[in-house]
Length: 271
Image 1 (cartoon, helix red, strand yellow):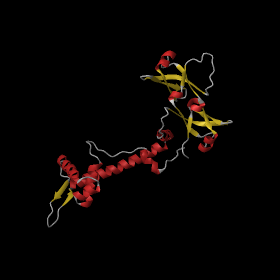
Image 2: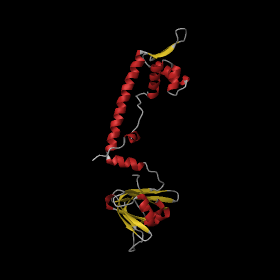
Image 3: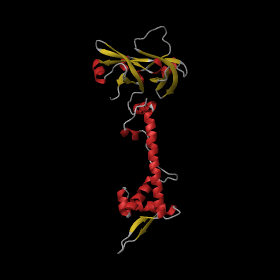
Image 4: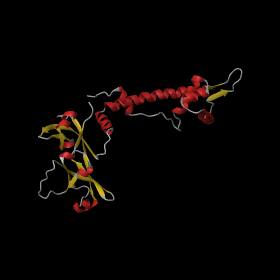
């Protein structure tokens, strides 16, 4: 079932100025339309926010490049002067305005199709979020477990992975964190530990997400290790280059991203 997006949000999805082959754009045709309505190059330039000199330069160039004269002007006198479109100029303007309307109809249809696509709608909304946290994971709250001081929110990620976030009771109430609510979990890369072999030990960290090393990107001092989880989500860890060498971390090998529940910040979309 599709969910319509409010009309006011549609232009935010796909926009575009109609540009013809050769670089002809709306500025020339806005000027032609203004000349047609005012009969004056001075008034036309003022109407579209151009300088008088710039308007004449654009008209002169268009006239020079066109097989037929597009704009004609007559000097002032007792009969008065003026600037007008020639039949060729009016025909060109009419054609562009028709193309412009077809272009508007096309963009409107495309926006509606994109807005009706749930994957695109979610992606569009989520990309609008700006955060310095390297890891941004979206999921749904499975359950909220209250504690003496804080509560634990269990988040279901893609592919069956679960993430645990420790949040205050106040945050649970204020954000409306409850079963079924979509949330975004923010985790900074330096707070993620990479484990290749537990060596028979168990760790107290609530989040231990197993996957495969997808990428190791070294910097001057530290490296970013990206672990791909079973469901397709990726988690980035920032560790030193020495740690990469000591652990012998290689792409394609199994590894586990480990981080505390307190390292997770939850966010919710406005209702």
